[in-house]
Image 1: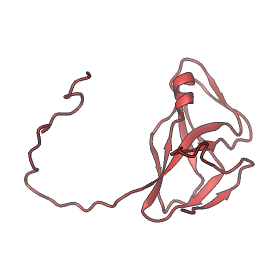
Image 2: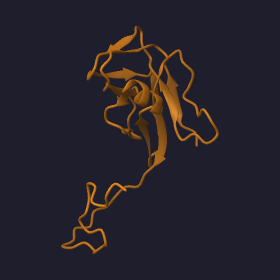
Image 3: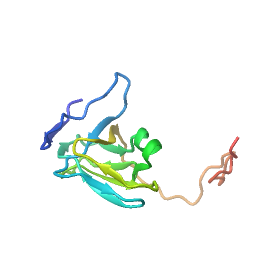
Image 4: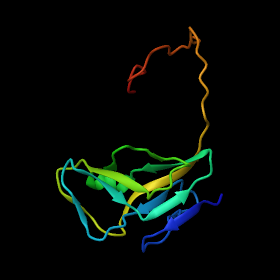
Length: 144
């Protein structure tokens, strides 16, 4: 699949790091470093603009290494970029650690997955079919 992309950053285009990667890393496009204090959030721009085909979305997800090692995650994970959005891709990062974190220009801050989606059509009914699970949720199946 080919996706139209404008790159107004000085960084390379997002790409898959391995043959089996689902996501491509997004890089910060900054004129100066940004410091995220504990519990602070910021929208970090990427310098990227794209045109997705209708029926597809781009999902912006945390990078596992940043989350595990530094407590930095995508606040609205996964963030959704719709096919009709033409603005610059921004990533809402939040610092969930107890230490300040500095984001440098060009740093890989998130990953983006291109995904096909369906459009739902609602059917209003009075009852839903029965299942073994029923209304059980929020841990109702246990932890082990």
